[in-house]
Structures are given as C-alpha cells and as structure tokens.
Length: 194
Image (cartoon, rainbow, N blue to C red; front, side):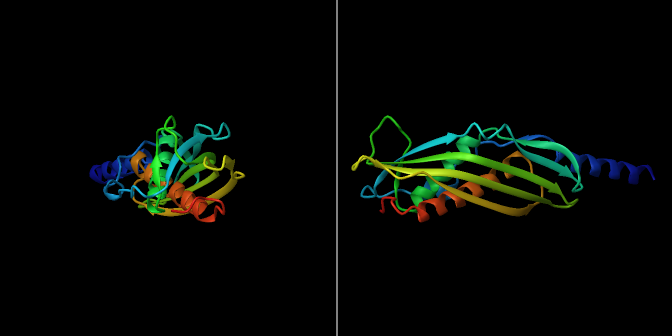
C-alpha cells in the first residue's frame, strides 16, 4: 500500500513539475539551419527584430488537469527565438540575411512582435500547447528609399507534446513564429524577390 501511495505521489509531483513557471529560452541552431548557405547572388536583407511593449513578461498560463492554473510561461528570450525563426525563413525563401544592422544592405525586414501567447493544458499523459503570435512586418527597400506599409501577420497552432518544459515550449513557440514570418514573406506584395 505504501508503495502505491509513493508511486502516486511521485507521479503527481512529476505532473505538477511540468506545470511550473517556465521561461522561453534560446535554442541552439538546428543542423538544418546550419546546412543552409545562401547564394552570394541572393539579395541581402538586414533583419531588424523588435518586441512591442504590448508583449508582457507573462505569455500564458500552465494549467494542471485542464482547470487548475499552477504556473506561467514567461517571455524569457523571445527576441532571440524570433530572430532565429526569421533568419531561417529568409534563408529558405532565398535571401541572404544580414544580422549586422550597421552594415548597409539593399533591403531590410523589420519584424515586431505585437502579441504572443503560450498556454499549456495538462492532459495527464500529454499536454496541449497553444501558441499564437501577431507580427507587424515591413520592408525597407534601400535602393528606392521606400518602405512598405507595415502589415500584420497572425498565426496560431496547437500541438500535443509529452513534457512542456522550457526547451520544448521554446521550440513550439519558435515554430509558430517561423510560420508567421513565412506567411508574411509570401504575402508581402512589395517584398524584394530573390
């Protein structure tokens, strides 16, 4: 009987630990990203990332057994995750991203995170993670001196993951930002094309 009670308490401890306050962290570059090398003929694009003051430190709540709020998801390194996601999407779209804002590029992409949310729901053996992001994006075309009007891109996704600890939540948030940036690059009518 003691053994069953000990197992139950240990299992409950593990579940509750998954609902503790968690901060988003910067992730190491993936092998996929390291293998992408832009062509020297690709248009160079400066990447300018901002986090709006509208984005608070708390991005969402972590619920235990669907209804008991036990923790929070904190913004942590949201700027680094956004930068990595935008860098990856620019590479995939055929651009040559430049992270040095002091170095002049022909074009620049400004990405501002206007809204971000990461909420988790414990479902006992798995967890539902809901991520959403609203980005304001705009191009500055230096060769013409014109800037595109900023436009908003929203994206949200749900996923089921085993344990929503910091690195995994960060990965899910970064996927959401990547999809939003990709959509923004595709939808921008005045974006310079590679």
